[in-house]
Image 1: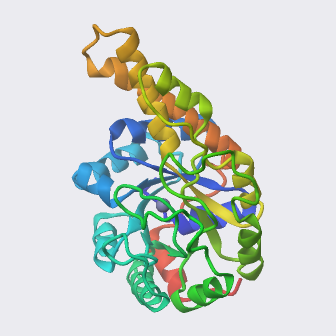
Image 2 (image 1 turned 45 degrees about the horizontal axis):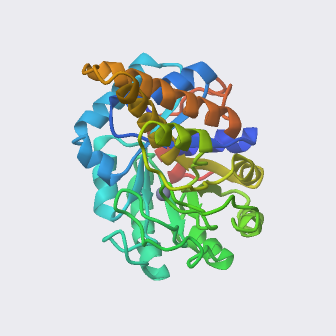
Image 3 (image 1 turned 90 degrees about the vertical axis):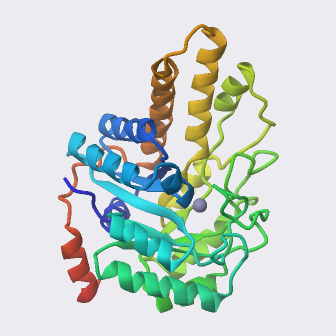
Length: 341
Ligand SMILES: [Zn+2]
């Protein structure tokens, strides 16, 4: 099946009461790992690429790898999503290239660092919604600022200084007409999220619940939601790595979010850790190896395991065959003539 819109995947997830992981990719092995995990667990998937990933993979390589994925895994509904588009232009170029979903992150200025005003965010996001919906493409926006920095993108804040204001979230959705809303509830990008295991207090789950109560039909998105498991950190450190002790977002907090309107969960760091650990292990145990396949195969397998586990934990497993894909043309038509829900 062709690439499908994210809106359809998230609408289905809302009906089924589950969440869908959105996994970042830069290369072929990561795409293969995700697609294999999806087949094994029968999961719909969101594959996402940041600006950094698009430039690393020269854009067209990435797009054609994704086409290969849809050819080889025709039973899996697959979305290609732009992660943290920094400007209307970036989103436009992704839509032109064939992404079926884009994030316009207007919470920051186009430099990807400076927190923006509410007015700027509304204007930029609204513009992307108009362009995207005309083509049936999904739009994710963000209100509030996440902590940390991801691929050079982020204000480098602690994750708590620009939490999403529920009143603003309501206004933002009304003014922009977006499909999915990323909220800041204390999560941050990267491996170093927390210096001890976070609780429901560290993460502002109450705020998430309030936003969901006020916007029950909006698909919420949790960014920076790697769990940074100790066993993956340990493998890296055991084979010569030097990661400092760190904690991510516990899976049970994500599951609580899923029970409260979270439909998309962004995971990148966990996969990076799995890949790096597997490669380090080969280098350490078999220093005579020099065939890239000897370490990329176990790296791909390690990432597949993490992705399959998350798919099961988020509840998307078993749902790949629930629905037939809706074409982007049909999605565009639906946006044009909205049906009352
Ligand atoms: Zn993010």
